Image 1 (cartoon, rainbow over the protein chains, first blue to last red):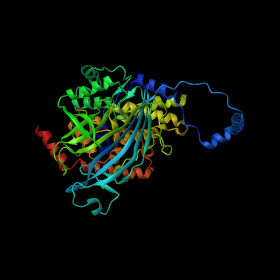
Image 2: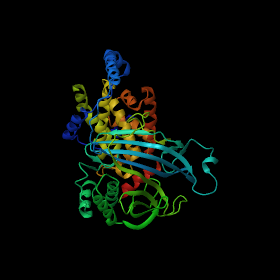
Image 3: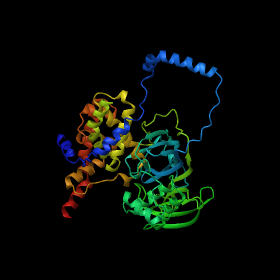
Image 4: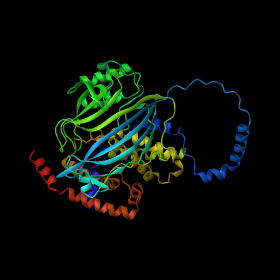
Length: 338
Length: 157
């Protein structure tokens, strides 16, 4: 047994080299950030006299007539706010007779240069989703609280999800919470499809799906209308991309769409990612992954996951986050260990 | 602040290594940076032996990143390793996340059992039980028919 751990130590993946420049740059930035206040009791004990004086001053100010306020110009918009609703299907239960669960939640994302605030799993809910019309296999199984993934090592918890708040401080505009792609400025990105493609290739390489994914992320970012148009044209020209033309999606909204072949997910093969944008504004309406062959009793051309863009706007106020959720606390994912 | 800077410089490589092994090299620097950002905000809670505490923060961030990401973004398998290493890594990858974590905290990140227990938020006794079970499962995974077949195909190719 001991040897096994020694062998495992030999199989340790290569450790990335520390980039001293980045390390020091991060340290310099981190120590300028505000720290959490110390415990309340300690604070009150130490500063009680000051609090009393402060309270007296506040009272005096409140009781005095207010002087006329100078007119302040409105602060320029600071954050790019994205509100999206996303759902996905996961195949669960007995592999010989599976059914699905529908995982549905909203994400509020506030993005600025050097910082990002994300509220995950808002209004989140996991519910059973029968794959055929004959009965409800979840109810037949006695309405279990958790159900095992098919082909995976985890289970899925049925019911509501807990929201989570994440605040990160990163240099530049990070394109998504998980993506490595980051830009110092979005303004400098080309508004010509070919030039934009070259610029994005320097970040994610020439892989058509990665290029397409990044271009799709740009379309939902705080870029100009020209840049957004260029990103859409870029996706259309990628290897294996398919222009869908005029399509009607979600409550009769009309748009134009494009599809690119996607890598298989851990449960579904033959997947393509489709993006539908508003032809007038260029803003995205919906992005979805669709299976192109029948799988698990689901017909071809049905969506297995979808992101609906509810709000994309520039705002001048600070992000609104739920007050009762700890910032950067653990995310209670509905996907749990078995 | 000097104390924080000193902990930062001392622990940075090990937090980076932890993040790289659990979330891939592409995300490692960002997770490390965010780990120390959280640590700075909670400096009053930082224990004298800060590493397990820092790895606990990194662990939460890695989990959040895993939840958000698709497989292709995290996959990063070195190609030049010999078969025994590839086999061991594959056997490790076939275990549950919890088992992998228990084993790698000891074998890859060099933590003592008490420190690893702190990272996982359990008692040292519980950790030993989990380690014992994880080792047994890793051993079993190395002897499944799939690995025998892989071994055979390796020899004949």
